[in-house]
Image (cartoon, rainbow, N blue to C red; front, top):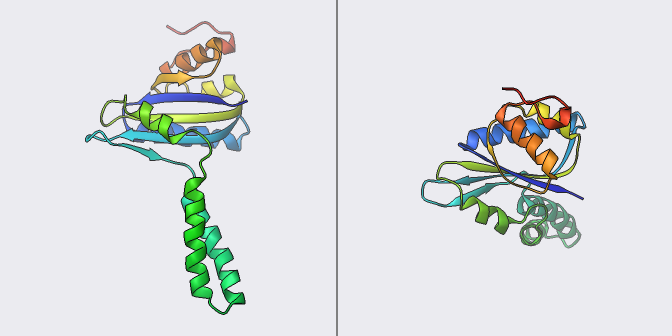
Length: 172
């Protein structure tokens, strides 16, 4: 079962920094992230999603490759590449996995212009170590599916306090 965490930040840069930090924790096997998206609300009110993975681009690349192979068989490689890329991009665009885009955009509408939110879909994590690495990162927890103890520990860590999962008393 995965957990969803949404944290608001005052700027896109800060949200991207925390996303990079969380993704680097995957290399140490402290967390397994299913999806990590930064939603940015621009001054004009438009919400832009900075996805980790772009299914349309991946589909177009895979489709181009298979289209080239099929095109070579019929002596029309350029037509095969074009048709394969188009079909792959369409298939990738219709394939949505991870966090629902409509949900992220609707929650992103509640942000102040110029601010951003980090959406994390977490498959597994060693909470106390991850929260320790996020200590003092700032941000406001908007929504989580964590239990109350872990959610409070996350809030404390972002604020720079010692978390309740470590067994230590909160710092003053």
